[in-house]
Image (cartoon, rainbow, N blue to C red; front, side, top):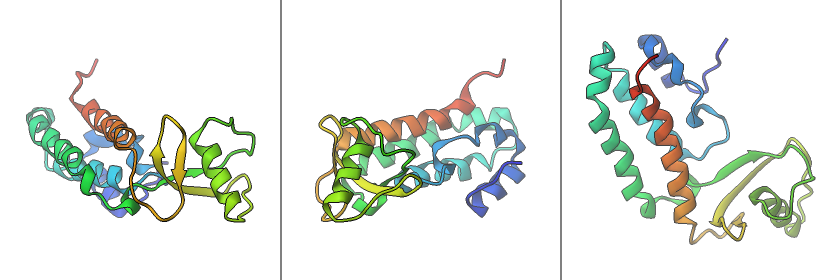
Length: 163
């Protein structure tokens, strides 16, 4: 049985069974930043108005405008909307990963990390694997644009022909 993290997504899925094939998207994972979730949920709300496949297809430009609005407003996003949440699976991370950088930052603050803990961090420079846990300022715009693009591709999936 599929578990829905929010009542809104559950209601949308119940009222629009043709959307059920989209439920493995990023926004329903529990540890995704809120800007991705907001973008995808806004698209889902719009999609829930469709009564058939033709109406869904006709919504593509309007949904793309939603995505584009989030891309254009990324610079104005509050840092807390961009926090990345990852469950730490192991302490054996490579030195060159965002998770490893987050672990080092937590340890600098005197916080002992253990597998199963949720790490929260802002990506400052994804290429150099620099993250921040507090005192947020700048963020890696290209990293968050890639996340938004990936989230959009998961929404855009509904426009592909069914084979």
